[in-house]
Every structure is written in structure tokens, then in C-alpha cells.
Image 1 (cartoon, rainbow, N blue to C red):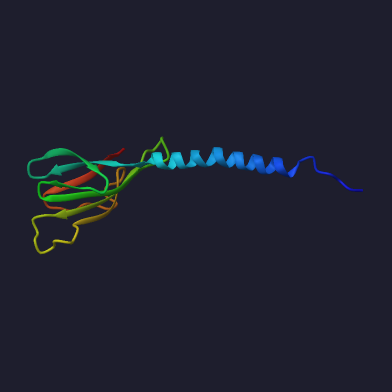
Image 2: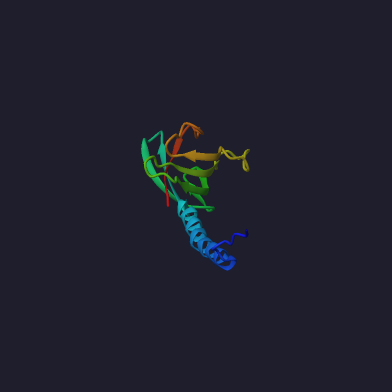
Length: 132
């Protein structure tokens, strides 16, 4: 005895194609919305005890007093209950002439745990505030 399937091959392919067109744009949109184009950092001048909010556009260097700061990439976390902001930041000291091409900080910075990869400088302290 021969059994027939109730599904025709054309309908399964069509439903698969339709579901891909509806699911893939949602995944791409959610991934793009997590990455930001701007990074906000706070800089503490340890001598004067003043905080300054610096807004950086990603991939553009900005001079702040004796520092040249560049945010390469920033990203917000996927979870709303415990927000985490990460950014890849490069910092050069403009005073030291013997180290023109060497960064005093080059790495990922985390908003919830700034001590994981600390920024060590005798005058300034930097921490990550937001990514948008």
C-alpha cells in the first residue's frame, strides 16, 4: 500500500522563503540597533577634580587637553535588566614626544566594570558612560 503526503512541494518552499524574508530583516535590525555611532566618556582631571563629558563620534579622534582620544566601536547589551556598554577606545598622550605612535590605552572598556581594563594615567581618569 502506498501512502501519499498531503503537502505539495511548492507550498513548503514558498512558506520557507516567506518566513526567511520576515525573520532575517528583524535579526539584522536588532543587531544594528545595538551598535552605536557615538560614544560618551567622562574624563576626571585628578589635579582640579573636575569631570568633563566628552562626546566622541566613532572612528574620529578628538583632542582633550593633553590626550588624543578615539573611539573605534561601541555596543549596547542585548539585555535590559543588566545594561552593559562596551567600547573599543584608543588614547594617546600628546606630551610624550618619544612615544608618538604608542597608545597609553588601547582596548575594550566596559561601563559596569571599569577596573577590568583600567586606564592608567597620572593626571586623567576615563570611564565609559553611554553608546548611542
